Each structure stands twice: as C-alpha cells, then as structure tokens.
Image 1: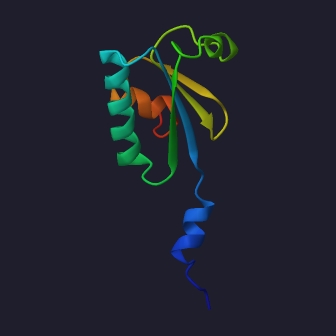
Image 2 (image 1 turned 90 degrees about the horizontal axis):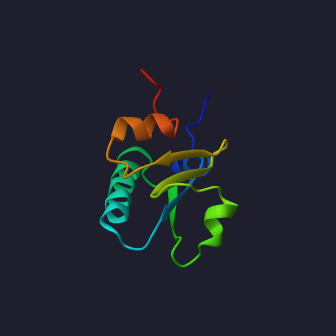
Length: 105
C-alpha cells in the first residue's frame, strides 16, 4: 500500500530558485526586465522563487564583486550552477533556456 505525499511535503522538496536582478536605478529597461522576470516566474516557478533586485547605483561595488558587466543582468544563484542572462528578459524562450527551465531547441 502506498500513501500519497501530503501537499506540504511535496512543496518542501521543491527547490527554491534564488534570482538576483542587477539594475541601474528605475530605468525603463530595469522596470521592463523586472516585469518580464516576474511574469516568467509566476508562469513557470509559482511559489518556488525569490527575486532580489540589486540597484548598482546604490551599491556599485557589487558589480565588480559579482562580475556584472552589463545591465540589466539576471543571476540565478540557486539552484546551482550560477547562470547569468543579460538584457530586458523580453524573450521568454531565451530566459527559460538560460535558467535551465527548458532545453535548448
């Protein structure tokens, strides 16, 4: 006899995606990138993600520490390995492949 896992046990086993979006202030590109990222996460990682927005105008040293050379840049911190995607994240397919949520065609 097998028992179904309680929903809470299934949720606990799912990995939490830690994403950092590096931007420079509230530029139109930064706002577009955040909106696109939020939409993609809601559609493909509902309840399994955290987004941290890092404003490099307020913390410019972080750009060197994290090797950020263009903005906006999305960094997937978890699950490993670290992945970086540059741009406004408009191309959903490119973002999904970059995050390893979809296999490259």
